[in-house]
Length: 211
Image (cartoon, rainbow, N blue to C red; front, side):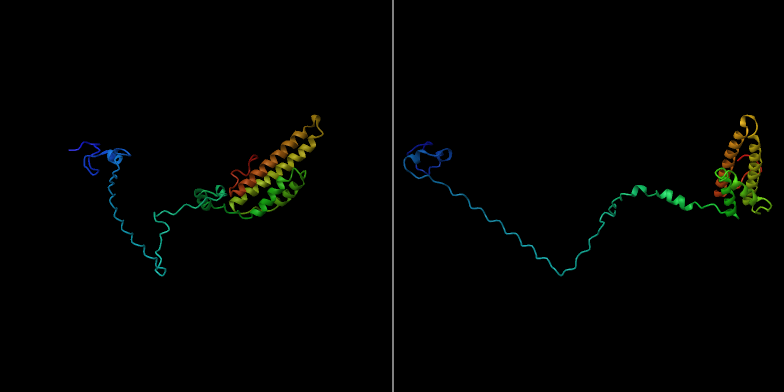
């Protein structure tokens, strides 16, 4: 039996492993050719089947635009923050404006004369007093309460204005605070009457001297 690396051993001796662990062996040093085992040939991989050409005349399959059952959210508009909420919109639709009182245009005109009494130095109040004096008021309870309220306001303002002018000649000019309080009282009563008429409410106590 030959020892590994024995130069006398044939090159194809099974125990000669020098060819496997270095660039040269004892056999190659003696001029014998190195036996190289050929690598096994690899089998070629089977060729993949060619893809069928698309049929250009086949009907196109319908694609579900919303496969999950939920539509994509629409992008928010820039002015969406100014849109009223659904609750507010439904509430405003249910809200009905108050009905107009019979003869409300004439009542609004007299209230305008009362409110302009101060800027016109009482001239418009005199016109309003002539408009409500000597005629019957409306029959509707709502309109009649405002008519009586206007009558008492204008008559009381006329009497107080005459008293204030007379008191201007008194000591300490007592007529000045009287006329100032009269102007304030007239504007407050006129504004309160317009607000109640606009809201469709009657004057709770039209014969009182306050609001």
